[in-house]
Length: 250
Image (cartoon, rainbow, N blue to C red; front, side):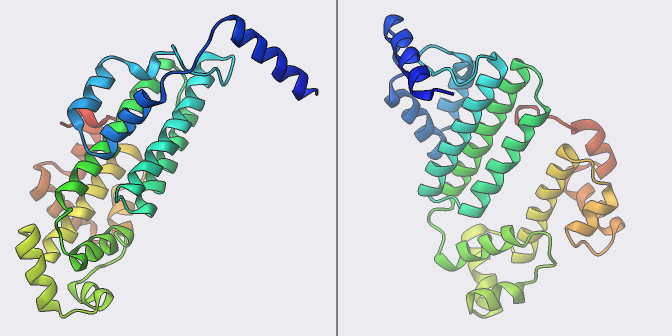
């Protein structure tokens, strides 16, 4: 295949059609809105269906759906990079990127792809908003939060946090109370329950598998804590929210 010849022919066609890519400033500004946790600006972008606006965007595939899928991958890659530069934990950012890119396999229509893009950008935006709210946390507290996220499927104790940060358990407890207004054990429980909600919404794992994966002492204990947090059993929560996106829950 003669790529040089193909490229020259493509270049001529684009020049004749006076095609120019969208101003980079527009895209960069949108990514900055995401990275700064500006939910209002991102929601406005979603409302105007900017992801589906093909003016000023390159053609990466002749198939319209595949073309948008390629643009989706580019978008999530750039958002991941900018969010990590703005403070999101790298492992968390890349896990999130992998999660959404894998979701493309199930996308069959442009509308569902647009919905996925909206969910993805708002997910990153809300996480960055939360990160900015925690920007004034001490280094030790942030180390604890990163440890909890990275080991959410393990049984985590305040002793684990103290050992990881090389502090006393009383110091860790005091930091959580002063900076987060919550005890370490309650924070760990909340993170696990949030993870459980996502698994109930977006996976087919059984309730007992989720309870075991997140290291709850038993399925009944997990169900009890889940009901206290949501007012719903895990089964009812899955029946209500399975497969729903962020805007159905906010």
